[in-house]
Every structure is written in structure tokens, then in C-alpha cells.
Image (cartoon, rainbow, N blue to C red; front, side, top):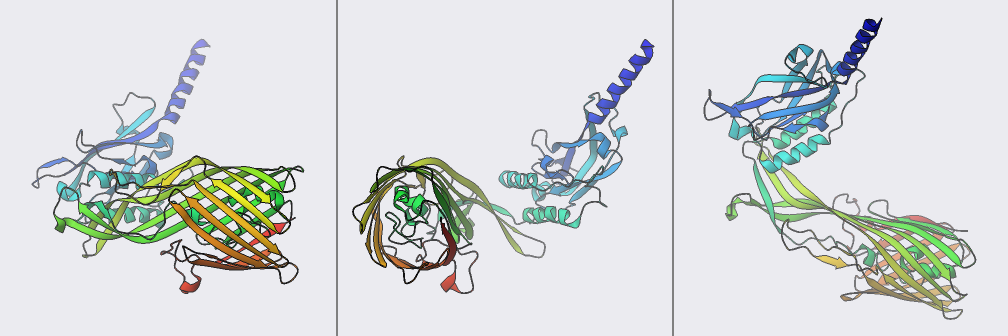
Length: 510
């Protein structure tokens, strides 16, 4: 009886071990070295298991050409299956895929109960090593791209099998192979940035004066409270209604969403967010790595993309019927692609290709604003806002990697505004000051021709931008010409007059 129990336990343990075995594919990839018969290990070659791209590896330099892929699959799922390994090399005519049959008898000497090793023997690229091996930086970039490929899941089967891999999956790898291909390929490093049009780090300065449908009224709003949460939260307490939710967007590269709620007789709470995106093609001079000769430089049209975002949480306190104060807590986020390298290559058909390798630059900060609103009398009110008290700095432009050319924009600013009311007409003036002096000043006017209709227009002096809007009860439409403040050269509309300048949204006061 005891013997039976012991044998049963051992059998169960062996079954559990077999189930837990992970398949590891290893070997040495070789290439031709200065002769047909002479070979050596091929370094910096990317090997991608089609059934789990996240497990992709690059062949090592020590020992040369060696690779070991932990597939992440258990032996029971891959046993007796054909799987595919894709190669990324600099050679366009080289063999790009290797089929491997997974069988437990291939691992005769292994004593590790948690792993099943499959060794690929005599794997050789027939082309010369210099024509196949990738540069270090390019190899790293392609390996990172491979790791982000989508993995396929097929119940109980290996998606890498030729009969199971869909065309779309294989095409993703073929696209990477095209990038790597070309005997005339070269790697060039960014050295000179030519002048661009995108304004980095200015969205919190420009938005209240220029990129708004409430021009002239944002630091002391009277009728249109749609952006009060962002620029003078204290004015919420003097607003026409205790609650509000507002949206303004061109549904292309700029959106503002905010709202506020009265909690008690003297306390309000506002919440909102601003998102803006800019795109352009900018000239960048690249120098071939390892060369200082000007003839080994190229000028490329680099696609730039800037995204900036801010979230606002604003508690407001009404001291009395005339005076209110607020402290706004903010989260500011900036991200853009910074040029680093360009890879140039030519395929067998003599077509030229280029592949930019960029760095992703991010800045994230918490900040705070303080605002004050004063209702001087029944027809005149004023507001003051101290924005970004901590003095957060955002990048003011792209920069050359590992250089001292980084520049920044201090986000601290001071906004003042006044609003004059005379029956159907309101007139407002705003001004914003930064560490460099007057950023801009704007004037605006709005008019109520009939119930539930609000007409508004405004002009910013330094930027020479203007806005015009119509609000019909809860819904509004605006034309905002920011005079090329927000750049969009990627998704350009056929009619440039309306390219990103038509905004729409809603305002619900309740």
C-alpha cells in the first residue's frame, strides 16, 4: 500500500514537472567571413519567434552569434509543432525565416525539470557578415520594435506554424525586414536643428488669450464661464449659475472640457482638462556616424509631434457677495519625439528608404494656481490669477541629444482681467505677464440680441489673432484664427481657411 502511494506521488510530481516545462530555443547563427568556407558567429541579428514576439533576442557578441530564446510557452503546447523564427538582417536577399520542429527527443542531455531545450544546429547565413550584421543602435531599435509586436493566441496550437500564421502577422515582420534591408544602408546622427514652427511649452500661456472663444474675458469672466476653471477659478462664485459643464474642441488637435459644482453656500469645486497637439515636418541635418566630412551628411524632413496636457482641480471659497478666492491644483504633461538618428538604405530595386530613430521626451509636473475675483460694483468686476506658482519649466524646443542646447519655458505667469457690463453688451480686457514681460493682451465684446443667444468676438494684439462665436442656448460654434499658433502640417484640410479653426461645443448652466 505504501509503495503504491509513493509511486502515485512520484508520477504526479513528474506530470506536474512536465506540464511546467518552458521551451527554450538556442543555438549559434553563423555568417560567411571573408570566404565561402570561413564562417564566424553573426552578431546583432534579430531573431523573432512568430508565436511570441516579446521573446525576440539579438545574437550576442560574446560568444559570437549565440542566442537563447525563452519562448514563454510550455512544452505541452509546442510539442510536435512546427514554429517559425524570423530573421532581421541588413541583407535584403537573405533567408528570412527558419522552421523548427519542436520535439522532446531533441533534449536528450537536459537535467533541468523546468526547461526543455531545443538546439538549432548548423544555422548559417550564406551572405558575408558585413552585409548582414546590423549596427548596434539599429539592432537595439528593431529589437524594441519586435518586442511590441502583437502575439497571436491559438487554442492549444502554435501560431508560428506556417499553416496557422495569418498574412497580416507575417507582413508586420516583413515591414521590419524592409526597414533593415539595403546594402548601402548607413546610420546618421542628428547634428543641426533648423528653425521650426511649433511653439513648445506655451499652451498654458496662449490658451486664455489666443486659443479661446472667450477672448478678453477669461481672467474676469461675466457671462461665458466655460473656461473659468482654467484661468480664474475664483470667478466661479460670481457666475450666473451655481453649476456648469462646458466643452470646446476642434476635434482635431485641441480640446477643453471643464465643469464646476456649488457644494455649500460659500464653497464650489471645479474640475477640467486641456489637451493640445501639434505636428510639423522640420528640417534636420544628420551626420554619418564615424565621419566628420560634410559630404557624409544629409538633411531630412523630420516629422515632429508635440502633445501637451493639463488637468485642473479647483476648490473655490466665496468670502462674501463681492470677493472670492481659489487655489487650483494642476497636473501638467508634455511629450514629443526628439530626433536622434536616421537610417538610410536602398533595396534591390534601387528604391531609397529612411527610418527615423527618435527619443521620446516626457515632462510631468504638479503645479498650483491662486486666483482672486472682485465684483467692484454692479457693472464692473476684476480678476487676478497667479498661474503655476512653483515655476515649472517645460521644454521650449527639441534639442540635440547629449548636448547642452536644451531650452525651457517658465510656466509661472500673472493674468489680470476686467469686465465692464452695460445692458446687452459686455466688454472685457485680459493681459498675461511672464518672466519675459508682457506675453499678450486681448480685448473682447459679447452681446445678447435675444433670449438664449450670445454673440462674442475678441482680438489678441501681439499674436494678431481673433475669434468669433455664436451660442444658441446650450450649444455653440466658434471660428478661432490663432494666426498659426497651433501648427498642424500632417492632417491638413483641403480648405486652409477652416483648417482646425472651426470649434464647437456646449455649455450647460444649471
